[in-house]
Image (tube, rainbow, N blue to C red; front, side, top):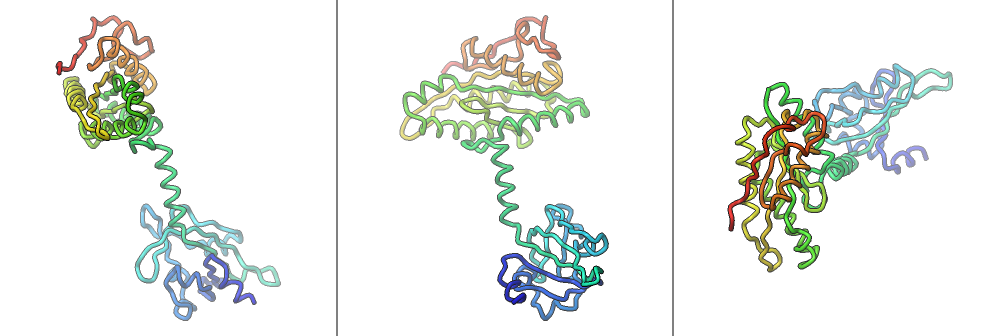
Length: 317
């Protein structure tokens, strides 16, 4: 009855003696390890249950050894991978527990494990969803702030600049109201793809909801490099596009803040870029503007007291 029960459960069960020799596998364990029971019996557990770290690929201590030596239940480290007998690998989750005989002495250990590939995929999927915009697939605010913080650290060490561009689609609400949300959503997706095509692979384009996008330019050499990107974005987005049979044309208002001149931390840079974007809108839209003096009151912004900024207007169409 015990044999039938062990073969009926969904988890793999493997038993070793005090020396770490395999003395039992159930049917699921045979399948997951790719070791037939007759071949596995009598072999060291490290050979049948060959476990490595999923990132470093370094071999890890078998949990049964720890369960026996420490006399307690031991869980396998997250991200562990089983190298099967046929050479393929499989993410697994397991735990090992010591087995005591009738005299209370440790007589071996039992390892219970299962295929964790699906749960690993779900974990990765949830992590991706938590850091990316569902409509465009771009990084969201959470991931952008993390990357901005890293970019500031790198720029500080390498004596570079970091630029943050806040972008807002001009009159997007009118398009949404006139043609419907399905057309508006498709427009946002095409705009997102165009923006990504205007920057380097090392830069980040993110969406913060609605028609607001933010671009992080890491390790910038000079301000003219930032201006070139802004002008490229204005020209690219101004081109007419067909969405669901409708010819649509959108323009951008772009606000720019630069580390370290306009702020030395993520909050200051984001606030000042946002402020600059609204100044660009007030100046007539379809242009880009750096963090303006007299508006950026946040500590760390060094633009106060500078001459009035130049408003860069896109070429008339």
